[in-house]
Image (cartoon, rainbow, N blue to C red; front, top):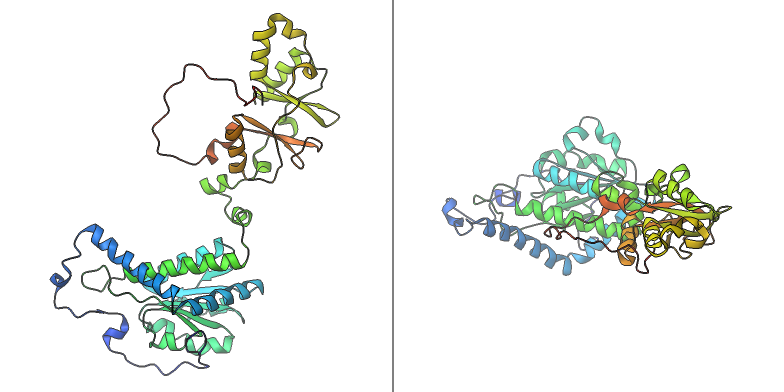
Length: 384
């Protein structure tokens, strides 16, 4: 016994079990009217919620030690370069595919293996030292049991999610995590509903616990999710900034005509002021509007050094786009200058504009804001 669970060197002989041990009808019934109390959608959801509460109770108590051993083993194997291979048939197999996908996306090497395909050559996916995580509520799924004799030969550790701790699969596993439920949402107690919900939740809990043990960070998650809305939210400043020829810049002695031309050509509503690669300041279109309002035609006789903001907001290239967006919202600005280490003394790498971050902004369901007749210039101090 390890973690309160049996460990065997060889699987016991296959045996026929009563139906109640195969996961069918945990409560006696004669017809569907026995469960007529669960007729509303809310009642059906509550049945599944109850299954999750029962699972959480076991994880708070008798199953915690076994869960801790399993999570620790998965993390240990991952560090050693081994994989967790998930398997199951039918609805359990579908849940297994999702668990494998969650493990992979949170830093644990994993793969799904259909037991039917495994019996016809795909066992080659398993390597010595790997873990096979088998899902079966009854613990008597034929395709899974036929794999048992070869696992010890392959040097693979068997872990199972099972609803019957005395089943063949459970007693053949190094560790078994209990996913039993008091009832299914199905009136006939036949369709896997609450039990597959429990399996899925347990798999998610295991994947996240292992990722913490592996010190899996948001940046690691971003590396594995480059596409879609999630990928855009996890993009870095470096990936979105305007650099090279797209970076607006003028020398400190640049006249107003050159400043306006650079802003118009680069279409970012601002320009950096640089001398020999050193950042001296920035100028925004808002700065120019306020200068014209104040000085009138005399503004056209000014140079960049005379009218620039010498204290622009800066950011390094490594932060996530969502962090840059938060910084812009905090200071009510529309652009950030990107420098090598986020300080004014390091080389300028690019410019990040608010427009580049629209797609990473969290979606809300709030009503549209009312139209504003006048827009205040950007910047908490009137500048970028």
